[in-house]
Image (cartoon, rainbow, N blue to C red; front, side, top):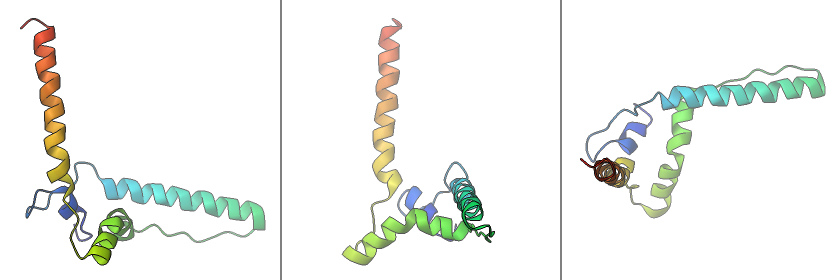
Length: 105
């Protein structure tokens, strides 16, 4: 919650935790990439490597484009949920209406 991702996914003024453990999954993904790079380095040079994969750094990476936008424009990025949710709601509403008419109910 300290990295700002909850601010980007919640409604205005109400930070909301992401539904999945996005930071954990991405941190693990970055860890796997680091392991593969270390193995390739070992095959190439014969020397091992120490790897790191931090959760806070992963979160900062995910919100990095929003921080850059603020640094360049001085305006905070639009919240993801406030743009995404109304469109998603409309898609599900249309599907529900289509299903209702196609089943004859």
